[in-house]
Amino acid sequence: MSATTNGPGVVLDVARKLLLQRRIRIIVGITITYNVVEAVIAIAAGNVASSAALIGFGLDSIVEVLSAVAIAWQFAAPDPEKREKVALRVIAYAFFALAAYVIVEAGSSLFGLREAAHSPVGIVLAAVSLAVMPFLSWFERQTGRELGSASAIADSKQTLICSYLSAALLVGLVLNSLLGWAWADSIAALVIAAFAIREGLEAWKGESCAVPISALTGERVIEDDHCC
Image (cartoon, rainbow, N blue to C red; front, side, top):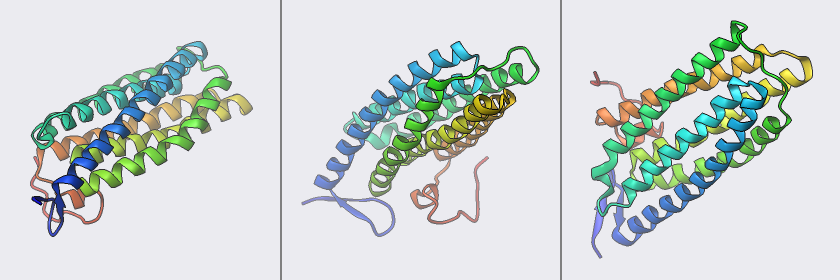
């Protein structure tokens, strides 16, 4: 049986590679479905409560859907590696757009243009996402690492961001509900923006540089970075 080499000392046979690619498509399908529902609920609840954090969280869900669609498009091709650069660029641009919007929304709240109200729906949504997203991220990351796909790893990191953002959102909404700290909502929104910028830069770096998979997964550090 023929085999393909995936990174130093790692060889995948064709059957295993096809299985991993099919597994990523399944993970992506689940992620898309969940995030569409999450986005609708978060944006609707955010508009009702004038919550920049909830709206930003919903927009992050939309970005995750775009990212997952990009990965699905990549792995629908006979040779997914040829589409990897485009997929990573889509992910990066989506992150940057999300960060820009959330910063503007959080700023308007901090400067008193509007004040976030309580949102029980948002609290429940954040708690559910905090339970679901880490598992989806871990599963896609493990598959992407074995397959040697930088875009799948980037997408899994984006899903993991949703876990961090769920925690930040949950804290902000709870503080606002229990203590009346409306500014906590804006701080949570800025945390979302900061994560989006960082992950956008990492996705862009993965697209524009020859970064080894082991570096993208954090297994080793690149000592000499020639990226511009």
